[in-house]
Image (tube, rainbow, N blue to C red; front, side, top):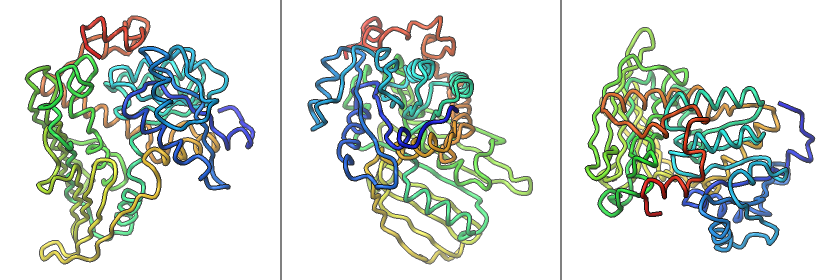
Length: 391
């Protein structure tokens, strides 16, 4: 990675592709945190936003926040990624366009944060990693950087052997309201043309399982899965994945579930993670974006609560992602140790296998890793119009 002066690296200039939910959250987070940065830490500046529909859509997004007057709107994605004013591109488009959009930004020489799911399949992820390596650019899959407080505390407990040897992991991620009941088949999460479905949208469950394993990401020796399809479009409404991992001397069983129609737990919470060990277990409860409670129980057979910690995430959701990318660029890292390429790739490979087991395929132009033959190189708005989507 080329050397960058400290005064340049401490103020990272961001551009955003897309104007949907994640784009709005990121703009809001950057705007909320403006002027509140640690004096010794990275500073962030939002340069501008591009929409696939029109420049007016980008302006409408910015007008909904009290952003500085100098914040720009761009005619299209290409103009944004080729702007010399931008250092890092935040990709907040539907899954179907992540590969094409990330490729566009990397080829233009920009660092990239792409919201989960990084791509539609493993072949696309490999291609992006190859290009980031060749261009010496930082590329990171983002999903609120792991619920920072919860994940770091959990990893600390596991490293310290608080619950003994891990033998079973359960991770369930659901949704607040029944998305499939109240949204049309052309919605972002339910459309095949947008690579919708629970598996790609709620792949956090797989990441949590890999992180809880001894030694980090490890390839499962066995994967079985079931899917309930959404009848209107054929994407997965609910997916359950059961895996077996081997340490060489023992097996670890894991179960991940993702749903667009139900909550994760009976109490209505959207997410919970259970890590069972030989001498206790860890439970994390909460919402998809912010966990609320972490429990540690001791004694496998007669569980007694060791302690309960109420989690208060100090930062807005996307600020830890922005800060981690700044750190990686400052230290000339192409990938984040917090979200390594190997983990993102393994999650994509597991999801490829699960989709194959359940005969879930997306249109060829979404699955391709050859950008030169993909009609998705056209703006998202044009692609959706050509498929008959009302957006």
